Length: 388
Image (cartoon, rainbow, N blue to C red; front, side, top):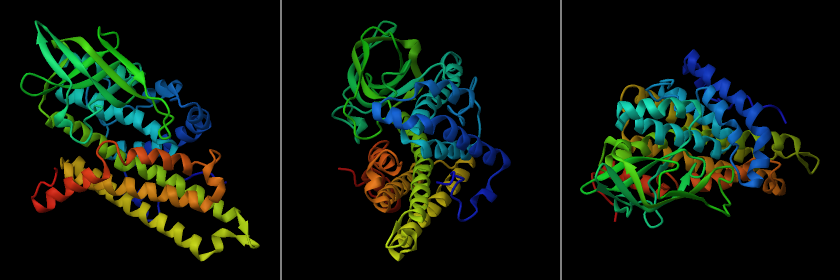
């Protein structure tokens, strides 16, 4: 199979800056050389390649668009391109970087104190510390405003009680950004590993995101000092703003998974012969490949414009929701189509589309389900809130 060199049918690379093209190529080479040789082993074992965390940090891939001590502070488009190349490798790899950057480092930089920024950001950016984001609960996913986790003031400390589920980086994290219902509003806390009453537990038996650390956060009257409360994170708007940052990265990232599926399917179709000729010569197979390429090309244009708007200060939730909704569904369709073109070979881990396909079943659910994003965009264009 020919090496992957990118999918760019509409020559979008010509609209990128030298810095953006360089970042994309650097991450592409890293994924090919350092990650892909490991993924089959980690996917089979159900483990995340923690041995790469330091390299991710050294390359500036953790919170690349975050501003603060030790952080690269690069453009939104650079961040998107990084996510795209990471997810070409695996959704679990992009998820790690996305949580670290968008859901932990970004809120510390925006909602945290100077002391918190100085304490946590350099270590998180370098990969010396790992973070996770605790919002989803066993009974509250799409409706975070109904969360049951509580925070009660006790002198100069807060007592946190509750459980968070489906948390990426849960058992690896040195610090968890936990959201809890305070006396009046929802508040955010930085809960450090070793905090009395705080523990984590891995989620077992996953079909999807196997090469990702997923687990539960257990807060059994965990005592957290007030110095670890994010001072400017008050109300549900704060975690929603964090999710909007993560969704932006997802919209870019899944294009990478789709590109890999297209590349593998095309190469396979050119080599696999049936009835005396490559299956790429059959009309139905060409139709499938053209459909994949068309949807990838549309998604690339959507994200490039979204990135440019974000760089202009336009970072509206419905815009990001439309891109997340469209692009994840697109990538999942591409993965399923690629698996179909590969036939029986597509169900083994020798080829990546089956792995991308199962991963994307999670990505279409987390950070807002496909239906939730439909309703976010629907409310924007009609002015009518349809959540019930």
